[in-house]
Amino acid sequence: MWTRNRANFLIIFCLLSLVTAELGIAGEEQEPLRLEAPVDGAEAWLVTYGPGGFYWERFGHNAIWLREPAASIDHTFNFGFFDFDQPNFYLRFLKGHMLYFAAAQSAAREFEFYRQENRSIRVQKLNLNSLQYQRLRNYLLEEIKPQQRQYLYDYYLNNCSTRIRDALDIAIEGALSAQTGNSPAKLNFRDQTRRLTQTQFWYSLGLELALGVPVDRPISRWDEMFIPMVVATELAAMQLPGDGQEKALVSSDRMLFTSTRVAAPVDPGDTWFSYLLLGLLVTTLAWLSGRYMPPVWLSGLCHAWLVLGATSGLALTALWLLTDHQVTGYNANLLLLNPLFLLALAPLLKRFGVLLLAGGVALNLIFLLLPLHQYNLDALALLAPVNLAVAGYFWLNRHHF
Image 1 (cartoon, one colour):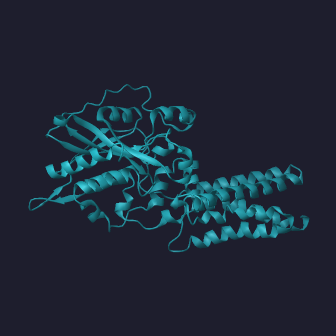
Image 2 (cartoon, rainbow, N blue to C red):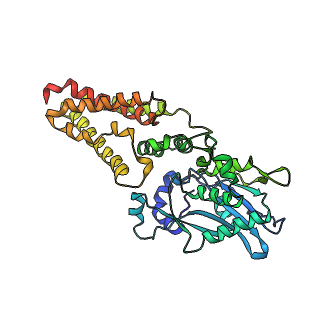
Image 3 (tube, rainbow, N blue to C red):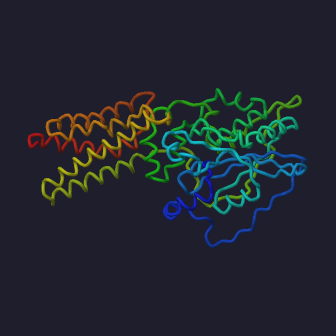
């Protein structure tokens, strides 16, 4: 998912790439991918690209590959493009009004690009009859027309993978949605996000802080196909009604290229302890520094934390109330990063600050005991030691203010 305009990509993210990008296969020359000629007159393949090194590449990407020599078609169709030069791009990004678009390009060129990026390439030949193929072909050709190709992007509900899912569902007359729409997902939006980002500590933490209750709700297997790899898995197991008997939707499944990257875990697992260690380390270092500095030093650190927490809380509130990022709503992290912390900067309201700091931690612990709750255990593990330490400082020094 999240393919970028190449030229602007290099300009804007070149510095970031030095830190976060995993290099391709270093020091090893590989032969170009050799693509066999189509066996039939026309073929449709699902292409699934594995995760990359950049933050936005952690969720993978997919495309539909059509091969029809008679029509000079040997192209991949995907919905993961956007243009930095579109009017008000960054403002639209902040507001949640991102415009993506569909495009088709040479399959050989696209595969070579992903191979050079050391991202796996899985291809699955779809066992479609002529009518199903034509329905898919016509839909994709219509979607890449200039007047049709743009769409309003949503991370979970309307992204490059759900668009591929929808195209395939149209081709097989709703069979995919019928078989998956009422089946519970193996992992919900939050779990899939945590699973695929947990190797990048700060990225994972930032997403957990920003994403609210909407990503924790139960979802169907159909919804879970916002992840390209889930689409590939579901299609590989799918059977379609045929002439008196069922037939497999996927007739061939192979890897064109296998990445050397470490594979993502199959489930998110427990990561809260690493965040707890960081929270305790920060708190301990602040306390130790206060032992060797004037009293004003520790007071300054505690007041600075109030400002930082309140500012972060204002940002979370703005994401919820002032943008169309619906997944940032009803965020329990606002109890840990509370805009009302600013009130506690006033000497007479220090006790109020103690209530906010300690009470926010307590309420989050209670919420985690509810059957349906927002998962923010990592954020809580990181912030609870700091908030409780600051609350303790203000309580012990309440007569000094």
